[in-house]
Image 1 (tube, rainbow, N blue to C red):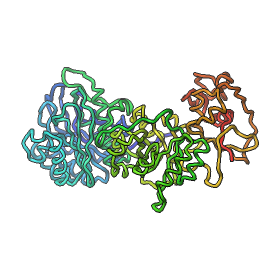
Image 2 (image 1 turned 90 degrees about the vertical axis):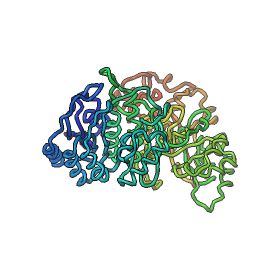
Image 3 (image 1 turned 180 degrees about the vertical axis):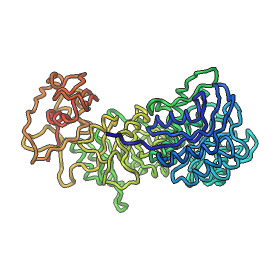
Image 4 (image 1 turned 120 degrees about the vertical axis):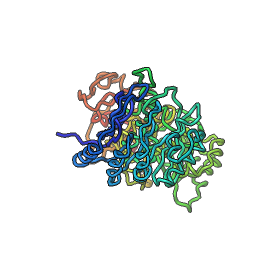
Amino acid sequence: MWLLAPAVVWSIAGSDSGAGAGVEADLRTMRCLGTFGCAVVTALTAQTSTGVRGIEPTSPAHVRLTLDALASDMPAAAIKVGMLCNGEVATEVAAAIEKAAVPVVVDPVMLSSSGRRLLDARGLEVLAQRIAPACAVLTPNAREAEVLLGLEAGSLLTLSDAVDAARSLRNIFGCDLFLKGGHLGMSTEVVDVFVDDSKTMILRGPRSRNEAHGTGCVLSSAMAAFLAKGETRADAAVAAKALCAEAIAGAVAVGPGPPAALTPPTWPARPHLFPLVGDPRRFPRIDGSPPRLYALANSAARAAQLFEAGVGDVQLRIKDPAVDIAAEVRTSLASARGGRLWVNDHWLVAVQCGAYGVHLGQEDLADADLDALERSGLRLGVSTHSYEELARALAVRPSYVAFGPVFGTASKKIRFSPRGTAMVRAWRAFVPRDTPLVTIGGISLENAPAVLDAGADSIAVISVGSADRPCRLGPRPPSLGCITLAAVLDPRLDRSLPGVTLALRIILTLIVLIVSRQTRKKRHRHTMGGKSLQNSHPKKYGKGSRRCRVCGNQQGIIRKYNINCCRQCFRQYASDIGFVKYN
């Protein structure tokens, strides 16, 4: 049986005999990001780590033949264009991309790192008149931007210069601009500029001590790969910068010259290199345990029910403009019973009423007075759905980061498709460890273990029970079916089971179990007797097992928090514990 084919990305560029740049670097990068790279070689170069010794252009006829061959058999989902060498080759490439119905990323390679000219005057003319206007994103560095704008070398020195240049180039060519700021005179950070039709985005990242070779190739091919996978141009710009920073940090010196930027085998590998967008801030950390189950309420009455049920973190999310938000917040605080109340959007009301924290979406994050909110001492949670939004959220160092929708959901209309557990794993790598990751969107009993196994700290739910059927948390009555929805365990539950270990408490907080009365089966219930389940039943729920301690299955074992059972037995595990909410 054939595997599902990955997205195809073409690299139209020169070949580097030293493999530090060109199609060799492009194909490594595309492979790292799970796409299938194809090569159209525009020139053969004889290179060492210190410079270019010779260039042999590919004949225009062979370039055209290669492009036609790929188009007939392996059509691209995105194209990266690098070194064009001369006007004849550039003309063939221009004819191909003018007909392309896929995004094209152009790295206007003009000079090698050692100063060797890689594009003749006729090629530069074709680049400016035909290729750049036909592309989706143009990725010049400061020196290349100066050539395209007709400026003297060294004219772009500051961030303000780079922003003006990027905007000018976008106006000239009509494509989005990613101006690489590595050549600007900044010693502690690298600042890049992305400009599209609606915004100018400043991307900040730490400057590496490595002076790597091939970084422009890595960035542009990564951007093409992300576009092929369906990311927006802004998201592709942020993610490509993150990957390029990792490649620079992992650069390998195989000769006396600058080391080659080397993309990691898997990505992300160095999450602290993720770029930031916006002014840096820092909001307080969450006291005590992070949210486990995070429930959303549309009224103070519903919030009171959730707090009464033992939910430790409740977000008051009221969208009706006719409702008195301040009154609802005060009523919710009065019923909190030691829980934490988060207020959605209405940050000023939350500050005035003394709520525990505020949750802001991306639009509200841009409009809120973050200086006043930071001075208030309230915690801040921020919604994220994409790489661009994550870069904006991480810049303010929020108290938690929310991510979703993980799966399809009808609870809220949003423009983002389901993100999946692979993105949850990436988000957990990018978000600092002291910042909880809250996941939301279509999470159910069946898929909750996969979400938690991917690294989520918390599961947010919008529909918990129903408003007309109050619920409580406690040991399961034998006569009832059960729904377990545990959050940060409050003191009432701790007193009812004083011997429950911390690890077991965390397990309890992460379970979402639904058993209907019609399908309920009679099961043996273990009596815990003040001991943890692992200590009471070491043979059944022992630590460190490489197979399920219940059925012996070796597939899908959940080892997080010492669960050590397969996902099929996860429900039985919760039933044995006996924690439920009952009507």
